[in-house]
Image 1 (cartoon, rainbow, N blue to C red):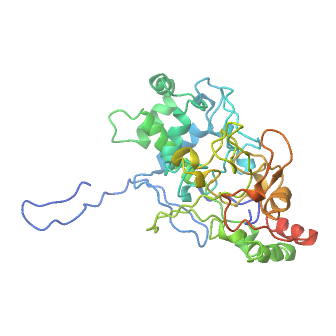
Image 2: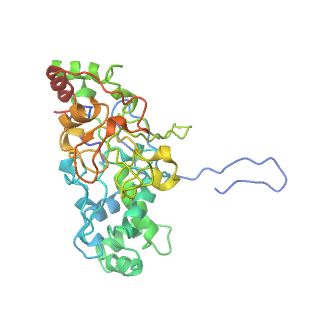
Image 3: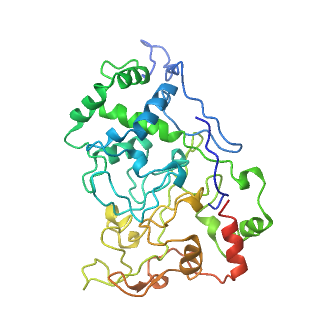
Length: 368
C-alpha cells in the first residue's frame, strides 16, 4: 500500500549449530515470495515489521479492518473508531465501541503507528501493533470488539465465508489451521503498519510564508514544542528497523490538577480523573500521575478533539489555553483545579507569551 497523502502540514531460527563445529549463527529465514515492500516517503526509515509480513497478510488485514462483522454484534470494525477521512480517528471526545461501551480515551491516529515505540496512550506493556490489535479484540473494560469468551464463534463467522477461507490460506500458507485469534491480530497489524503518511506541504517544501513562520516558532526554545514532537514523525517515542535503544517518554502537561485525597483521589494534589491516571495506573508512582505518551502531530488538523481524553476541542485552545498558559485551568466541576500548579507536570511546561499573529502562524503550520 502506498503511503497516504497527508492532508495537513507537519504540525500536525532456529539457531544453526553443528555437531561440534563452530556455531554459524542464526540461519536466515527466506522472506515470503510476496513479502510486502514499503513504499516510503523520502527521509522515512524502514519500519520494524515482521519478516513474514506479506502482501496477502496486508490484504487480509485490510478486509478485516473495514468489515463490520469484526465486532461481536456484527455492527462495527476497527474503522468504526479509525476513519481515514479523520486521520484514522473518530472525531469523538472519547470513542464509542460498536456494542455501546464508552471508552475513557480519545482514539489515537493510526497514521504512522508502525513507528510508535508504544501503541497506547499510557500502557508501557503494549509495544507492537499485534499486541494492540489483541487488546482491542479482547478488551472487556470497556468492551471494544467483544471477542473475549467467544473467540471460536468469531473465527467460525469468518471461516464460513469462502472469500475469507481463501484469504486466510494465502496469508498463512504454512499454517495447518490459519483461522486463529493470533492470525487475525497479525493481519490487522500488517494492514495498520502500511498506513504511512509523509507527503504534506512540509515534506514537499511547499509551505506558505505564514506556515514557515509557524515552523520557526514550533522549533523555538520559547515555545519548546519540538522537545516532545520531533523528527520525521513529530514524535519522540519512535522505533524503526535501525533503532537500538528503547526510546519511550511519557509527559504530564498539566492538563489537570485535582485535589485529594478527601475527594477520593490518591494524591494530596496533582490528580488526574480516576479513569485516566496515565502511567500511574501501571506503576503506582506518584510522579507518574497524569503522564501520557506524546502522540505524533502528523495529520493533527484532522484529529480533533485533542488530548488523551478529548477534553480540548480546537488546536487554538491547545496552544493558547493549555500550553501557552503552562497548564490548563479547569474552573469548576469535579475536575476543578489549576494545571499550571500541578506538582508533577513536566519541567518544560513553563508557559510562554504569544500574540494573535503568532498563533495564526503556528496554526498555519498545522493545517493544509
